[in-house]
Amino acid sequence: MLNILVPIGVNLDSNATLLYAVDFAAAFSAKIFVMEVFNVSSKTGGLSNITEKVAKNSKKKLREAIDKIDAKGVEIKIATFNGELVDGIKDIDKELGIDLIIVAPRSNSIQEEMYLGHTSGKIVKRTDIPTLIVPKGTAFRPFTTILTAFKSGALKRKRILDPLITIQKKFEARLNLLLVKTPGYTDDDLKINTALMDLSSNLTITENPTTYQGVLEHFQSQKPDLLCVFRRKRGFFKSLWEKNTVPKSEFYATVPVLVLSVKKD
Image (cartoon, rainbow, N blue to C red):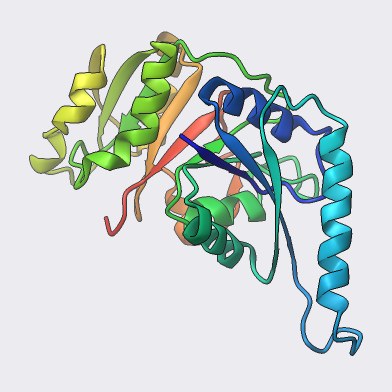
């Protein structure tokens, strides 16, 4: 895990997300790229250098925010992009190779009843980069117990698990698997990837209408400090495929959530 992207913009929530990212990156000797996206069209102001001026101003504000925190030896770089958020993330990923995105569930502009706001929801929905969603006010601490929940144990590529493997090995965390048999499950869904089984300390199989309801049923008994789920088209964050926001009534987590990508699934 070498490059971590933190798309926090200039309105930092008490630098909480960046502070968490710094502690996390320090544990892995990783670099952080703080990303600011702005949108300046060719019509704006009629000035040829307006984009350069906006980018310069964004970088200045981000640098001022970064300078206020203890970087703990972590290299923090600034990346700006003129255009849409997802395009910017894909652009920097293509250039640098991003191993993980760390993001807060929602921005301050989203009402309290939302778990994932428009920005964070868009990142989870429209990118294939592993994403760590960190609840507001969470201080970093080494993970001791990881609950990995899924409705299908079939994975097409082992490298999907790379971030999970890296985190589990780094902290020597106990990894518990939760296979949730949802309506319409097949025998293939019950065949769990061998690499995933090799990581695990325990396997629980349950039947629930949704994967999330399975997590709710077993969360208290498992007491994880990290929840890991898979990004599938009709998976854990099913409602994301209809809209970018996720209400707390549909999902809410008090611990960080690691979302792994399952492409073309």
